[in-house]
Length: 284
Ligand SMILES: [Zn+2]
Image (cartoon, rainbow, N blue to C red):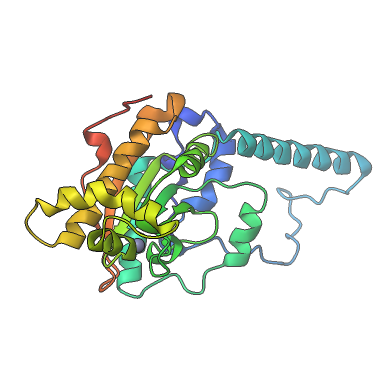
């Protein structure tokens, strides 16, 4: 089990040791989690480890200390100052490692979901935001080999974003503190296929098909595989829309947006150039 908590604490949090406490569960690599506390025998009596009677003063001291820690963690959770913990590059590395485990079938199984459920029951600090398709085959926690509390997922067919989605992203960036956004298209996307087949569709599906038309039209002028090109162009357009329209406030320069293409046949995610390289911190 490798722990890299110290280097993962964002300098900007100013959370100090409390940040360390919050970050620790999220910086264990390759799906390792701390073992459950063992109910071991009491420590041996020695000059350096005297047994102190549990008088009323000690009870009060422990209660005050516990209250202080819980209050501090609650405050940090509420403000999000220690959330995320990983910077965008570290978060992307973690996603890549997780996807690699998924590709070669070395997923972290069985995952200690009960431990993570307890850790995240009163606060969340997802290390990455995934803007993905609603397709049943591209569940972010699965394809990135993550678990409860790791990923803030916004999913709709065609991995599009509307006002509700943009509001969700703003919340994930601040106050939750997440700084990496992945727009994830995928192979054989039904929404893309529908948009290629016709410029419109009945009912609410028509909204999706029409929204995908700019990407489809742009892809028609490119050589190569039309569905893939349309999917990649759509992901780039969605990333650009997020950068332009989401209000990340002072956190905007820290936010990195990347696009990925999930290959159903292999389980592998192929990455494209970070959008932020061409539009750093713009729009806000
Ligand atoms: Zn899809």
